[in-house]
Image (cartoon, rainbow, N blue to C red; front, side, top):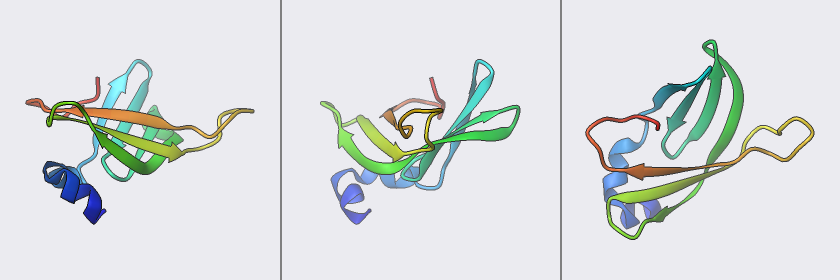
Length: 94
């Protein structure tokens, strides 16, 4: 974790600040450096992944966080997701 913040100190302020957004019938919750979850009707239906790593984009205002080892898909692999963060006025999932 110290190495993450040393490479991108601006990300430290995101720790512990989860964002939940409705997209269609589902809600997705992203907790930076922790995990990503999927809800339906306010009930957790899938853990999509736990924080694994991050990469800085070409400019200093874009970062991609990688989450792995989520719940297993029905008869398939474990879920994983990548979240790209960009600077903006509001915290939201798009």
